[in-house]
Length: 412
Image 1 (cartoon, helix red, strand yellow):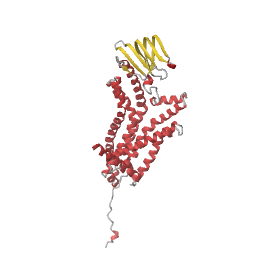
Image 2 (cartoon, rainbow, N blue to C red):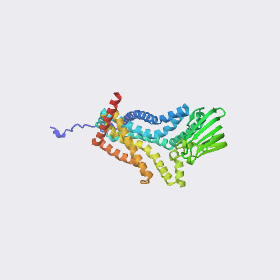
Image 3 (cartoon, rainbow, N blue to C red):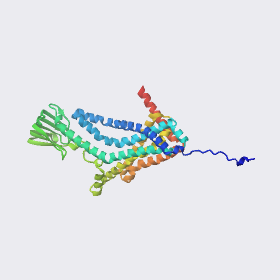
Image 4 (cartoon, one colour):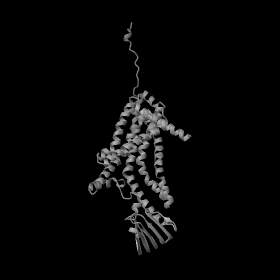
């Protein structure tokens, strides 16, 4: 008789690594990446359009009042895009990852993955990969496209004003194309550039307001000095003097110079317009003021800190999206905007401390990245341990209520 304990019990083999096969993870990562890429592209277009609308009034005014051509207008918009990209790329990464994981969580796909033995940490690589690609793109924009775009924008703006100034001097109309000057001309020969019957009211210096009359004149520009000169012939200058006195000066020829850099604000090359090599060369030469040196150091750090926000936002957005599983895309969009707003408020606060030299430039600019990275790591760990965060839940609920209120108002 065979004893029961002598009979070997059947062994059941569980393939614990079934869900960890390389092909399985490759498929999973491609799936998550597709979920992120669609809202990423949508976010880039949406945020760029919103920022462009803020400049549209000024650009439209240039078309209407200064006669800027459509080609020049499109070029000006193109030169503004690197400035927008520095903001829109990190914003789009945060929105895309948040919406993707919010959708996965709402459809219980995250729960299914966890039930299959996949932790939240294993879902991080596709978001980090897209964040790293966005970081690389934003860094290229920051180091090369941004300074080139700023310089090209200002140069084109100068050429537009220079080219259109004589064209804007309409006959028998009070022209105010140049700030501080009101110009009236009786005749404007556009072919020869000769003006006749000229009256100019010069109010650039409120203490010395003058009125100038001239029979003939012309306009010449100096691109290097960024000045426009009104060459006047056979006229007179009239100025009110002290105690009711009146002064009149006759002239055969008179040149009225206009500094165009005052008409085009911020025309001088600033730290935002400099390349990385130019900033380092200026700092190394020691020939700049202390204030300008501080601003250059801050700008140098900003060129790398702002693109790095793409990686940090990718980490922060995962727990935010999982917590936001029942509030919908509108609440996710609102919550992402709130997170971005907090980031840029902290960045502005840090830059102010850096400008006042209360913090070193590196710490001042990297402060929001450090805070968001620490906060994102804590939120991610809490989400991986499936712990709810009351403060975050309240914030998401408030964002959902705000989105619902905005939706009800727009529908009504």
